[in-house]
Image (cartoon, rainbow, N blue to C red; front, side):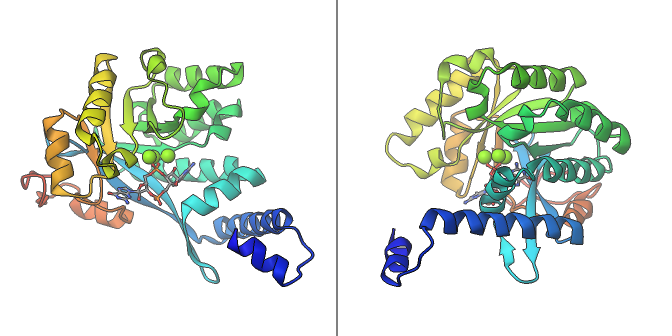
Length: 283
Ligand code: C2E
Ligand code: MG
Ligand code: MG
Ligand code: MG
């Protein structure tokens, strides 16, 4: 890489790999401090039912605004948390705050929380989720856990038991980023998932976009799953997905991730949604 060769030119003694490890370790340390000091917060992005045109769920997305580093993207700090063993406490914090927030929303609006594959290799996860639901009073069926497909291919007993335990609690399991990794269409019908979220890269690709998206949506629906597409950015995306019979929609066209106060503002109000027919958010 350019950085590597410039480091070599400058005669730095540290190998780029060690340099990288140090950076991740420093980031993870700062993240730990940020959680402790209250510099982490959650934003929520609505996911709409394409038929009723109302939000059925809000996805909780972690935000870190650091006094020194500025705003750090989850694409950067989630991997650092995973590598440093901090993803357990971080996920627990996200779950607690998201469930506490959602317990105040109008029924049956759900909250969805992203899980790292590593969370499912921790047998304690099921008990943690159960405790947080009890503590916050959020009914289990209003919590969605978003899983990534990579880990579902792993057939380790711990992960399978974890998934079964979560299902037994009554929470919903959604498959996130579908098609971005090891898309294995064959196992879709064997998953105990309720919704498949198709990765936004499929909207960004133009060659055979309609055919490929249409095929994926039809296949998932044939397996009895509902289909969400994330990353809906344009009216043309929206039109295409309506034509293809996509069940759920999420993207900047409708709403960006927002602080919880903005959700509150729309609770109980007949707030118009510009791109969704002016239908009320909450009846
Ligand atoms: P994700 O779970 O696939 O979340 C969707 C990401 O796409 C979010 O990015 C969201 O802001 C972005 N997005 C939504 N609509 C659009 C759109 O129309 N256009 C574009 N360009 N982007 C859109 P964000 O918040 O930066 O999060 C990135 C990833 O970081 C997430 O992808 C998720 O994998 C991870 N992440 C975020 N928060 C958490 C968390 O609390 N726990 C874990 N384990 N992972 C998290
Ligand atoms: Mg997600
Ligand atoms: Mg995710
Ligand atoms: Mg995704």
